[in-house]
Length: 424
Image 1 (spheres, rainbow, N blue to C red):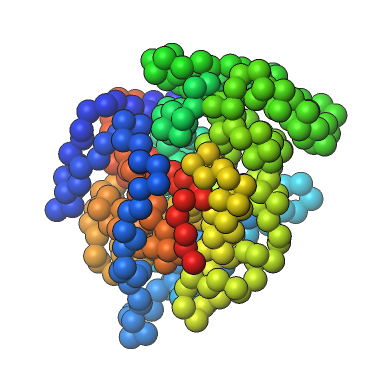
Image 2: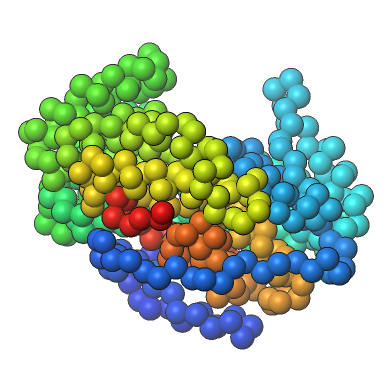
């Protein structure tokens, strides 16, 4: 096992890959969107697949909720004859991969695999490649930190798309400053701070605040595994208002645990403080409960974003963002709450699938390890545009043992400041 080293620099990198030319700014924190500035949403839609296209199928393997819903939406949109969606089966505490492997190997129409499960790839990639080396393999990371650290596995994959969590700490601070933050408050606990990527993000947040000349404060939170999650929530509900009073309302609060998010958002709304993002980058993460949204406002078919295809509306994403904008504006908190408009797992799973379609169709480079970043950028923007969103995407590549791995893509999306843009 070799440790992945991610190059984060401030230089403009020009990537030219098989005729795909694109400028990439790897340190996107220097270009924080202006609050309230509306960017025209692209009008073009995702390409349709002709019914006369040659037979092909893509297998999608999921083990988390948002990737699962993305896969279900793709199956609904393109049909079961194009999509083989399988969730990870558990059998008496161990994972039985063989039924999935056999199904993929025996179906000659399967031309690509999109896996949102690292364990599936780690356990099966050698066997799969030995039997079907013609398959295009995409890893759409379900986690916000590097999971695949085995060089042999990485080399066998055709495309990896993953949130660039190593730069999120800097982006978070710069966005907070753009929203008027004078202090960054970081809630966490001992167990989380022993996790390397969480500790690295903390260090980056601290260093960024020091360079920017604002205050950084570490706050103790209750570990939800020590007693129970309700103890953690109760602590946030009691402590955050006091911290906002002491530190000032221009404090951006961040917590490292999923359990904390709804409580932090609710208390930020109550105190007038600032919330940049939850620990997991998704509008479904903490916002619905924290903003007091009713379940039906974004789960029914009131606001369909994809014409005549309610199942592909990804759990009512468009309606959810509308409801979030309305709730934030109604609470006089416009400009104080932000986040990603499209869930990371849904985005990476979807554009991983769509890029595989482009590869099968011969529209992108066919060489192993060569990826057209322009195509990924276009697919991401078109996907977001179907929900009325503009999620500018920044793509970078991984450096592994000092070498650039051009098929390992690290990505971030622009923040959306809620309450300032109406989608109605």
